[in-house]
Amino acid sequence: MNPSTLPTYREFLNATGLEPVDARALICHALGVSPAWLAARQRDAMPSDEIERVSPAIKRRQQGEPVAYIVGTREFYSLEFAVNPAVLIPRPETELLVDEALARIPAETAATVLDLGTGSGIIAVTIAHHRPRALVTAVDASAPALAVAQQNANQHAPANVTCCLSDWYQALPGNRLFDVIVSNPPYIVAEDPHLARGDLRFEPISALTDHADGLACIRTITQGAVDRLKPDGWLLFEHGYDQGQAVRHLLQQYGFIKINTLQDLAGIDRVTLG
Ligand code: GLN
Image (tube, rainbow, N blue to C red; front, side):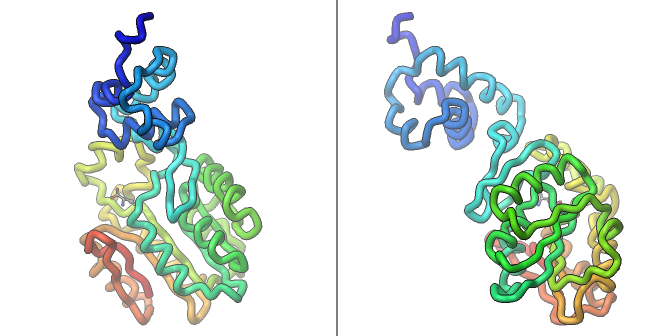
């Protein structure tokens, strides 16, 4: 083929109609090249075999599939995590939850940490990676999700994460107490129209909504935490922008003290702890 009839990399990228950041990520992934490699070739003709190699990924994104599922990874807290449609895609807001948990886990002691509804394991694995002496239990009720968590634990914190298939506390050994219980549970209300839009359509519905008022899982976890936390232990939740007051009230009801709600980088209520 006459090379002059081929689009340049830039022309190809523009013709996808995708967000440039998405198109670049997909091209780099499909070709196995770095963003710098791609940037240096903006004006060069894109060989037809490369066009063929990137087209399936581009098509999937054009049909709405999230980039993270297509490339199979997403960065969180400067670590690269494996993801697939069995797990929620890591969100930057959740880094606040990890920050607050880490602030309550001393580096020098063998603190016990429980992450309920771990999904891809980002919370459990990031904590374990930064607190090598901590013993972290990662729980999920979904076996395919837990397999992803295990893979990420093997990658980033092989020595101190235990994955456990369990419906919240149910399958945990009865006598196990924790210094910190942390959770990013499904907290979207059943009728939220966002569930039918954008990337959320492709994510596991059981990780997003409790099919109720958005507080059902937070209630179950709080209730159970009373018997599972050590006396000075901490319970930390990620929750929705309008749930701070309700979660503070719930923690109060169950006898928690030092209750506080924190805002994410967008200034939105995102984490409540006690
Ligand atoms: N923060 C996510 C969202 O709004 C929801 C995550 C969750 O329900 N735990 O898309």
